Image 1 (cartoon, rainbow, N blue to C red):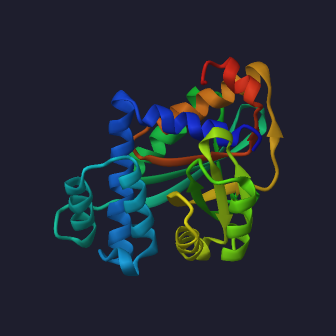
Image 2: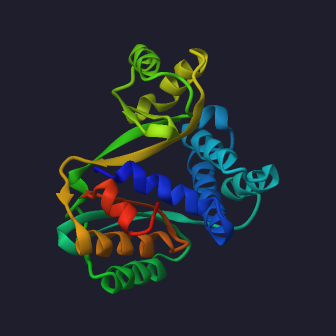
Length: 249
């Protein structure tokens, strides 16, 4: 969405500060644990685990935390989480996908439903909004190289798109299955590769402005604050100016 990259940047800035960093670590640990449980504890043969560990390192998570999370996933330590995705609408008809990792599905469902209600939205039936989102691979490139260099290297590596992010570098988007192949090719080309992950990109967007934008962002932030919530995706079209006006700069 217009403004989506900026909103993502704002979330990462918050996660890197104070208590928010603890929430970020909690989410990353859960992702590592589930990735190890589903695909094994060897990152070389488990692309999802490899991406989760890279994200944890980008967030400066201590190595011991990463090791414990992997062992928890492989059964060497106790603890089981399952994946569940909820769909709903924010104010103004904005479609929302909420990805969760939980050890208590009933608790999480109730919390997510209550959060939608509190934020002026509503939980929807399965399939109601998921059709509007496409799964993509996302590779963050740190600032430094020119757009032309990034574009040439990305296309050569088999990427689908390059999204400039101003002073934050670039986002390279790929087919989900090609994420790590493309990232490796970019590294070999000498580009400063950062976080690698899978994202959801909306196919159609809903423009919201002023008070409407404020209400949507408030709901998204409320959902993000839940420890069981890993990611929140929305098809809101919010301008950078409105995001700045909300004091999120």
